[in-house]
Image (cartoon, rainbow, N blue to C red):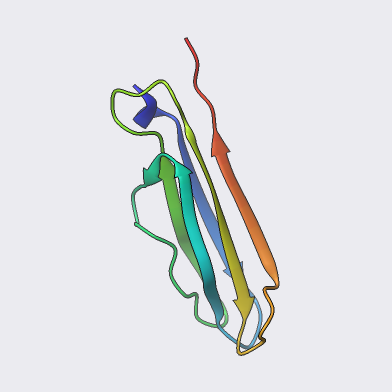
Length: 87
């Protein structure tokens, strides 16, 4: 039931350096579709990741993806993912 609640994220990286994943986790739910978040090359637009609730669960998905530009030591972007489903 909860797999019907999905979050799909597309990122358009217009920078001249790659957008790297510093950390990614799902507190609830699972990675879905294209799988876990991956690096996005410079000047590319890709479906970055998807998340969904677990099968036969009433809960949705919840998690965090932190990305950084190129070789910078600190994170530059954080995406909070979440969807809720209740009956």
